Image 1 (cartoon, rainbow, N blue to C red):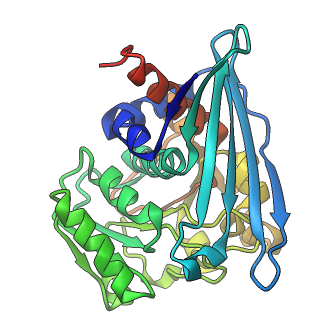
Image 2: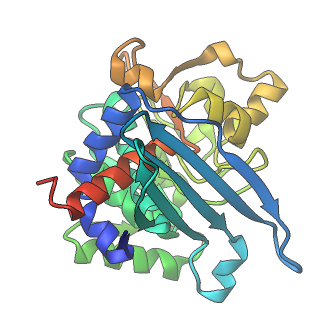
Length: 316
């Protein structure tokens, strides 16, 4: 059985190939049950979360990701997310690979945001603001910069030192990233705002969104988590990665649905519909678009297959 550690997984998941693999999987025939989602008590701290995410391509591959999210790890200088992906043959059930789940999750999440932005952000978007300083932030910067001519990239976090570290890491990769101190000023100017936080209260109010802005929300994955407010929902055309996931798990969707600010019919499309062309994305330059992602098991399967086949020499 193949085992890919964090570095090997990262090297096997180049951004262009990963974005393309996820797009193909969304447009294909992947079977994806609703994921298992469990709260885990951690004495003296916020609850952790255990996620189990199965998916399969009949007769080809099947897999499952097990992920833990421990918010209290920030105080221990540890990543909040740990996980492993188990990839098996969809014909025999033979175990093929164990792949680092944290790296897979971070990269496929960012790649999915970049994929959605191709349909929802303005083609001439040149200013990106990333909110959050966790593992996702550097990946979001890289993925959104792939194939897009960004002239200004800012990163904001409540901990300025952590924001500075992210900016330094991005600059080491050849990306010109600056640390944002005035969040409202940066948000009002940005063409694309990508939030990867674990916040339970809005980080970006809808009032700050300019005409033509694209708001990408990827951090909140539970009904009590929220990265924007009702004003964003009212002003924006709303899109999701999957309706089944977002309407049950994403606080930025669940809460306005419950209050009546949003109706399910007002969710314009899920990502598979954008990719297949059955529903439109951005329709004019002044649209404010909002994409809410909670993560889909098919994204992990796409990345796991890509990593496995890359390691086997089946991919260029």
